[in-house]
Image (cartoon, rainbow, N blue to C red; front, side, top):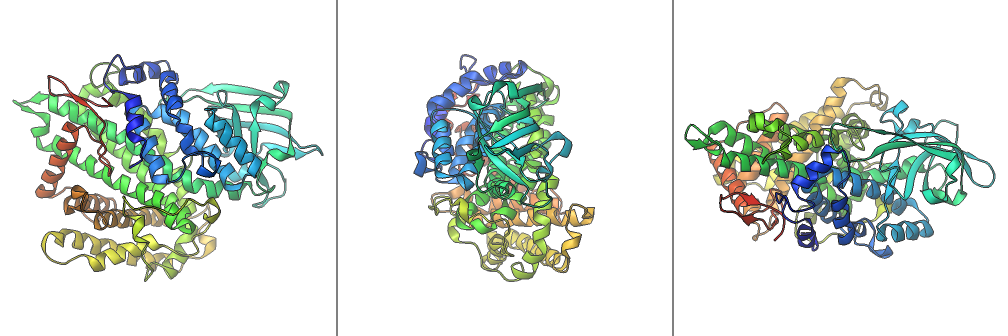
Amino acid sequence: MHPRLDELERGLGEAWDDGNPVGFPAVLRADERAEVLTAGEDVLDAFGLNEEFVPPEFGGHLIRTDHLIQLMRAVCRRDPSLIFGYGMPSLMAAVNVWAAGSPSQCRDMAGRLLANQKFACAYHELAHGGDVGQVDLDATDYGHGRLFNGGKQVIANVERADGLVLLARTDHQSGSRSHSQFLLDKAALPSDRFRYLPRYHTGGLRGVQLGGMEFVNCPVPSEAIVGPAGHGMETALRSFQLTRVVLPGVTVGILDTALRAAVRYALGRKLYGRTVTDLPHPRAVLVDTFADLLLSDCVSTVAARALHTLPREAGVTAAAAKYLVPTVLVDAVTCLSTLLGAQFYLRGGDHMIMQKLVRDITPTSVIHASRTTCQLTMLPQLPLLARRSWPAGEPAPEQTFQLSAGLPDLRFAQLSLSSGGNDHLCASLRNALELTPVDGEHREIRSLLELFVAELDDLTGECAPLRPAELTVTASRNLHRLTARYAVILAAGCCVNIWRHASPDQPFLRHPGWVSAALIRLAARLGRRPEGLPDHIRTHLFDELLHRYHDSRTFDLAGSHLGGERHDDGALSWGSR
């Protein structure tokens, strides 16, 4: 667990306290005004969240990606708009500089982040959707630097940011060397050479300030280019490997809050002389979403740790995580909202946070990279994976799954655009099957692992003969389905190996119940098994769910304390004492 997590929880305070300037009531008031929660930004500034975006060699604490996710998830549990408006834009901008920037650029970025300055990151243009390789913002060489002409749209924090990292065209020839990234100090730009575009208003994440910039003959110094000229796409694709892992991992916090709100409602609502939690269907919904949260955290956590242990394979792993996890989370939050009935629609009252969570989680599946973009990242790599690794590869290093184990340093230079046909995580799925006993309490897990390995074998047969010409943006829908199956199989390997490598001081993670539930939920996504959980597994997970709720602990793998206080009515306020 991140050593500063408790400190951050204390700064956020009690979530349901109307007097807390960063409690849910204040969060919702800011959301109604479509404004950023300024008191929340003050808390994060005082805490020094930006320090977590800076590598230690430049004075920060960006050491472990899984720890970074834990901190950012705590903020997301409180207000998704706060983390997607305050944290993610600066992180997305910074990682490009750490990946390819000069020493002076790295020092400049670090110094400004440590001084609580904000950055924005601009890749996309509306005319080209998610295809960042087709951007038109022009950066023409004029002898003393570059002249910017054109615009960028839908940029988070563009007006509020002190600096920008953006992708621009530096060569009008087609090919992978036609774009470069630039690190811009907005204060150094001549004010008459650019203008801000009107803000875009959104249904979800309403506090995130989305806007754009338009440049007309705006001079930018040559030293603003990040990395060699023409390498902007390569830098972006390597940086995406971290941010595509962090984003879904952080978003798990939305489901955590939604599940807590649903449990709070279900315990306090009586029907037919019983609480809602006593009724079979609501109880099943709560347990199913708990299992979905755990499997989502398994994928995000393993992908984050694999950035350290298997950096050359991170591209395909990150794309799989970004493809699958937001979909699972959106489905789960939507399902939870149905338990509240008409209460779900209310924008006030004790359960008011749920309607915001449903709105906020919906765009997370397309923020930064859409499902299709992630599929197009995975698809070209599947044939080589099928031929080289899936039949008989080496399993991943054990520390990839051991949550309390240390990790190698994060080295951006080791991140690769292609895995080279290596897939140690899927090899770990086969290894888990070989090491799981046939009899006893593990029989259910063994049966499920046999199902997933058979699915991997079938996928291998389909992917191995595919030709590169079939795997472009014109690929058929059936080929896209191959990536969906791969992401689910990869997720199964993450879940079972988190279970296998749980330490003795993690009794819940060592129990076969939760991993059986996670594998059953994943098998249902493949259409290979009904979604319903056996009664003994459902009972085990429900007991754990209530225990964590009453003990004021998170529902993710860490199960960390939120420091809630019990009130006279038995309800819990969560945050920090």
